[in-house]
Amino acid sequence: MQLDESVQGAGGGPSSSRTRGMHRRPPVVQRVSTAARWPLGVALTSWRYMWRTTPVHRRELVGAEAHDGPPALPAGVGSDHLQEADDGVGPLTHRLYRTRILGARVSASELVERITRDLDQIAPSEFARFHKVRGRDGELVVGDEYVVRMPGPWDGPVRAVAVTPLCFRLATLVGHLEAGQIEFRASEDHRSLEFAIESWARSGDRLSHVLYTHLRMAKEVQLHMWTSVLERVATLAGGKLESGIVITTRRVEAPQRRDAYGGTGPRNRRAGRRLAELAQRSLNFDPDAVELSDPDGGWHVDDLTGALPSEPSGPPVEGGSWETARELMRGYQVADPARVRATYRDEGALAGRDMLLQVRYLGSRFHVGVRVGMVYDETRELGGRQARVFGWSYRTLEGHFERGEMHYEVWKWLETGDVEFRVHAYSRVARSGPLLLRAGFRLIGRHQQLRFYDQACRRMRRLTQGELEVRRTTEEQALAQSG
Image (cartoon, rainbow, N blue to C red; front, side, top):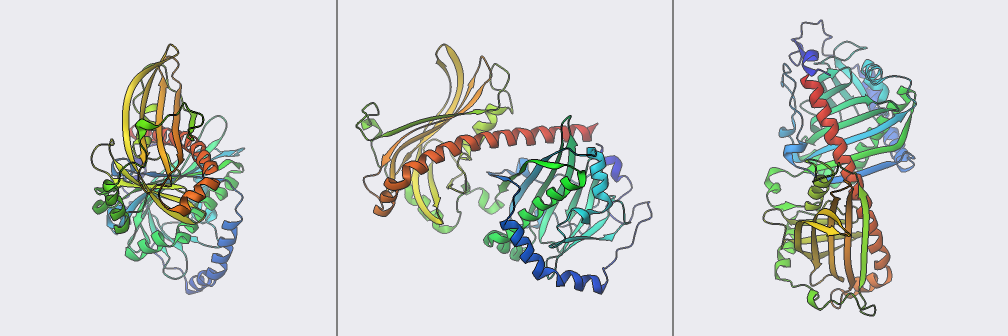
């Protein structure tokens, strides 16, 4: 895959040496027809979204600009009229949709060639259409431009900035609701095809930011649109999806907020005040007085272990499973954001950090505080076997509806290369704090607690696998582009 070869002489627009189609506006009849489909399209899209049967596995992570920023434009591609990610508003969202297609009757390159003949064939026609406004029909080359036609102010102008036999990338133009790039690519192995859609974008303006951030349906419709595209790609390939669609979202906060807070929790002034108040609170129990060996002591003691992708024997591999899990744990990516979100100050050491946890249950949201205690990175010996262990714990603060301590750990057994994620916790209902929350915890808290532990183990496995796969794919693409 050689991006530079596909863009030579393109210049990012009409300066290409090829004979190109003129920039053309769709006829009035077509624009009216598109607008007339809008009410029916929204209703049909909402209906299909609610009754969608394709399994969708979502992963939400905190991102970093160094790893999640958009790729640079290929050499020779101009940036005139592009609306780049830096031109946008709000956080940068790096999202990867991917699926495997079994039984495909075409190769990866043949699939991409079919798609690029007419992008509209993979669009959910009841909601959006790709209309080509620059370039010849039946092909896709660098500099071609499209408008994703939706009624009202929702048109999305884009330009092709990279095209190879296995992928193509589109960049947003001025006036788009988003600012950034999106790439479509295919790969294959001996048993299946993999197709992925990867985007890097901010909201195009403040109004778009408000609509996307505060109106959840706008986000859900976008997710539904791209999952629908993947379903249509599978049909075009003559195969079927294997195990549904995986969506990994990495959110990078805007620069003015990035230095203040970390985590996936709220970042408004109220959350900031609540977080600051935690510094004045003490633990709601005495760790030195906890007697876990007493069966009548009332403490629940839990230990869960989940397998992570293995490594070769010996010390942890750079960029491997153990190091990946360690970084996920440092950023409190352990908890499912649908259940628990954390807000904390991002500067300073992990040890001693106060964290404001937003617990979500049945539409309600409760805020409680915890404080990080021990942080350790050491080699341990257990049963004659050595393991490298990284871990940290947090303890509950006054006002929490439970009291206790939880440890998150990642182990690598040096002899075998096996890697594990472990949860160790002890807890019981708090003696003080909101009465309603404590009563609710007595009734249903234990079941939800065990469910949280199990979900944490499964989430860490999925996230670690996903991060390793994205890293492998990125390295393969960089290698292919360089040679």
